[in-house]
Image (cartoon, rainbow, N blue to C red):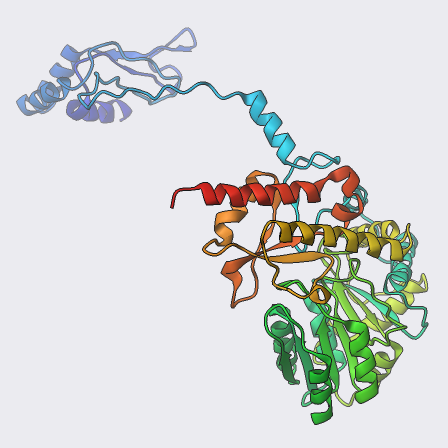
Length: 503
């Protein structure tokens, strides 16, 4: 059957040349154990064609033969394969462009210079966005910890120590306060606040400094809480007199403030705000969204009288993403215990998580939902690194680096979204692009130079600015890593390159 099928195909398409057919069947066209090709010459094909379909097939073969080379075919080392070699094309002649061969060694050297090579990590662009940030080698190595039981004594001890270290980072010694570490993103913190510290029908006052206030308000509405936003112009924050007026007009169960809004780089004055709330509306719980501030901005939980500070692992703390972290005051916990309805979430419920956190911090095994042992080990390492120096020194170094960056941005003639110095965050900078430029024109050039910035996030102005994250190991070890200097040079060169491009 194979032979007949082949003959039929050759009658229509085969040139008057030698065609080789290699049998894949043992014993067929095979001699001394090796595959030997069966050969068909043009005369053989002609006879086959005449015998089977007569004159018409011969004419078709003759027409095809004009366009095919009569040289012997090259054998292909694949059963059932044939290949034809065509004659020179009658298309227009092609003259290849002569280019010198690439200098591979030079290209590799340039790549290594552009990308981070200051650690044991694979060469990569410096990630300088407002989170996730660059991570220290030791933190990433902690992620490779062998698998262990989440209720085993070794892991329970590690988790308990991490919770205790969080108290030091948030600067609380009050035994009534409680740290929480739950698998999830910083957004989970919103759910934990809305589900546990307010009930359907309650009022929440959300101070708006950017994108994340909108989202927090939306989260409250999801749980049936009425959210009122007090908005400031882009780059600014609500003024204290405005907050005081709002608090006097209505009773709010909670007030929320984004310490640093990642979309705008605006820093809120938490200490003064807390004093005002305690004075004007002492029953209102004070909730701080510190996702982009914890580890980069000072927070004195007890001294400032805060009720909740929520954050995430992947920003100023310097641990890979995946942990939602909170510090909750004793007053907030008592408010939770006095609620009249069940929490609006099962996974986020304090009823389920509070005894777990208390047990782990007491070095006792407990279980509600499985934590991530590897992430907890990484968090433990990151917190150990943070606390190896006084927090005052860390925050002073963070502020000095931020001021240096902002000064250079001013020298370049660029503007920040947060124009007032008191509104400018220390862990990031949001930068207006020159008129007519957009992030897609600048960010790829930065990437080629080994630096990654973030595009704009605020929905009203996203196409007009970029964001530079400078926190964590990139600041604390800048003397060795030199990432901030590299970033500023890359920004200057990229903007100059865009301006030189023809319009």
